[in-house]
Image 1 (tube, rainbow, N blue to C red):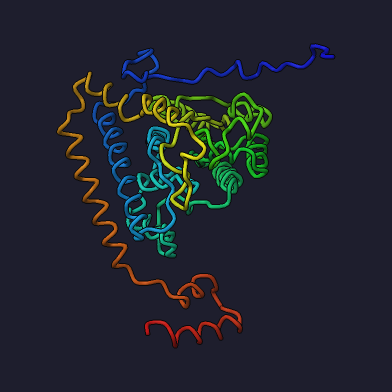
Image 2 (image 1 turned 180 degrees about the vertical axis):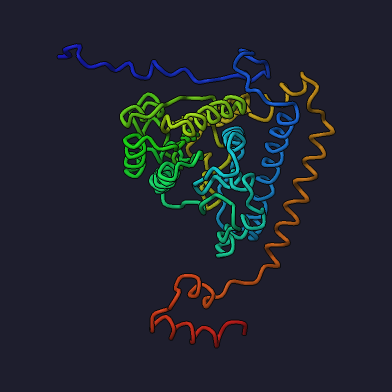
Length: 362
């Protein structure tokens, strides 16, 4: 029998932040971020560019010209809006789907393609690019982000470390360990949970009994918020405010971004039609981040069809140039791999290196 001592209403504290409704109209003008027309235009450009690049990447994967690839269509507002709120000196620790944030933070597109192919140069970043390579181990980036943020705090740097994880990743042990440490030491970290409803094929209802993922931050003493992840303005505002908190020494923030991926989990054989109803996709397409932001900008006279057409062509050309540059990059050698791992290779690796050096290039 219940004693009435247990409060199960924690989820009532979350009402998703939404600034622009699916019809493109502003819900509350006071909530609009203070961005110039040029910045608003650039946000749209980046989302359109990313949608086209994603479509091209899927085609390249099917042609065998790319390796591992995780589609991003539907999640552009969550990805682009969050990165747009950062400073160049802030650090991004991505998961394997978060390549757009890396590219808009400064990673050359051709290197993103090399990463997809498993080429080591795809993760050999130039000085001043504050990103780590995409994390394949689910949840490991959460612990790493806390560590980077701790480094900022110890050095009295006014920077933040931001990371991304899917809804399924919040069930990993590393997730809890990372946010608990971040909360305990009040480090300048931002944890963005991109809740796209499925951990590959497992729906969120089967992963957790928590009513929201945002509330998982409470136990770690972390400020938490839930946002409409299809609304680029809401995502931008939430991350910008979280970054301000981190820079001001007010600790970490957990942001649950309610979003949706239209395509498969990855191109490695996942078929979403086996576990998602067709009408579900149609429902989410009515909330599409590009459609609603386009309506908002067109009403303000900031975005025109000519702009969209130009960005589409720009993206197509950029992808073509990037894949060509990736194709022309020197083929990776086992000897190069050994040299990049060991400063002084042990004897058995020297023997292997000598063996391979006689075979490579033939």
